[in-house]
Image 1 (cartoon, one colour):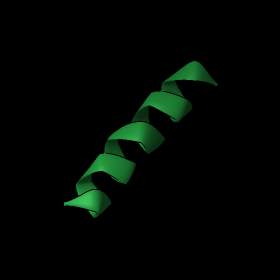
Image 2 (cartoon, rainbow, N blue to C red):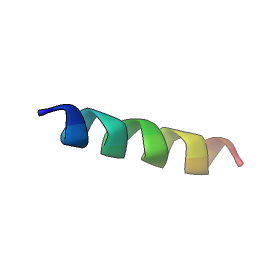
Image 3 (cartoon, one colour):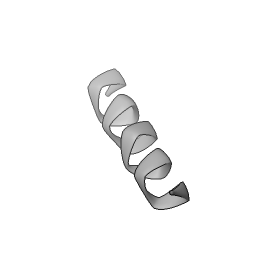
Length: 17
């Protein structure tokens, strides 16, 4: 699902910050 993909990207972005 695209939603799950976005969730993963969001987590990655948060880790970057």
